[in-house]
Image (cartoon, rainbow, N blue to C red; front, side, top):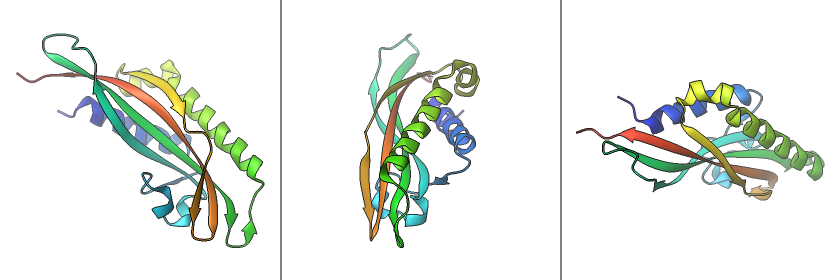
Length: 154
């Protein structure tokens, strides 16, 4: 039987692909500058963060508060010089973030996908610069926490 984490992860991958069908999946979101530039032009990636124990809900289950984030990127400066106004790309990143937050926190969509697991928006990283060779990108990481309760096998 798959774990709750596995179910949530698979549901997130599916939901992000649908929400960001116009974006490219970043293969290695843990180190953005190590990705080929074409993935960062207008990309997104899913990162798994730390987890911490929550209170045991019963004698036969455990709860983990798992941090999961989505990284969003946009190109500012490419091989041919300035591609787009920096402020335009920053606004686009924040629009992408609000679409993500609204989509994941909309209980009518989330509850069936995540089997009722609690999802909370934690915060975001603010705009960060990514330099890859001669190219410059801006990124925004959006942090969520998932309260995952899992039955313990006896």
